[in-house]
Length: 286
Ligand code: 1BO
Image (cartoon, rainbow, N blue to C red; front, side):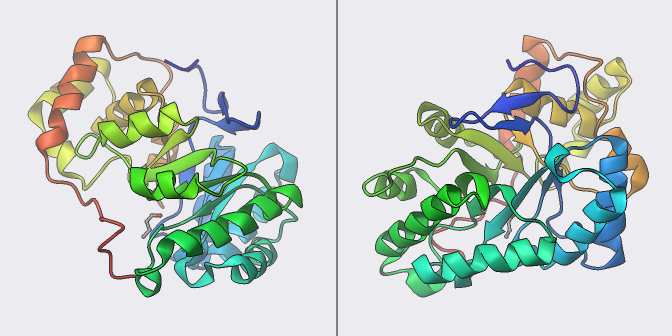
């Protein structure tokens, strides 16, 4: 288990870059004042890691929230992602510049390919990903990203990428929570030196109604959300909880004054039967 004492503890990526162990997620956070205010509130609550994506449509507001917080750029870890329309070498080189402009920064800390198999490249995703990854490597070399990686990639997408990659992805950000713990993919990522980042770390919300988890939360005087985020950390995942409510933004930072036992972890692991919302990247319609 990683060293878990505070929100700003870090994992070390395979290229030596330090990444804070909890990130503030902004998927489905409405653009405009809501995104700006929630990012500002997150930074004020102590988050030093913000996760967005071109596809979330909120990069400008996320950038505005960062600016409004007054934090120094170098004190923040910022991730964004390349969308499906921007695959291919030339498009990717333009996409990073667009994201940097929207975010109002000179570099991101982590740049990810958002999906491995966009619907328009279903017949040639292998060569398209190779070209996109070539751009990702040049983006890294140019210092526009301090680390690069992928999201929603499965083993066969990565096996294919490794045929031409000269730099291995440092992160795979996946749908990862007790109902969809994806043990094979998690082990694969780890074996290939990738950090497992968890988006939707609380899953569909069904987890909140599980009596064993409610009892456990009561025993620790915590919420079920805090219990599940702690589970994620004790598995060495990097959870990206999202909220637009100041009280929950704060609550999701309070994960370091308790520890789940092996038995507690097993009870949460056993929730894998709950139906999740996993999207298969090879059949997704975007
Ligand atoms: C469709 C977006 C998934 C989370 O990044």
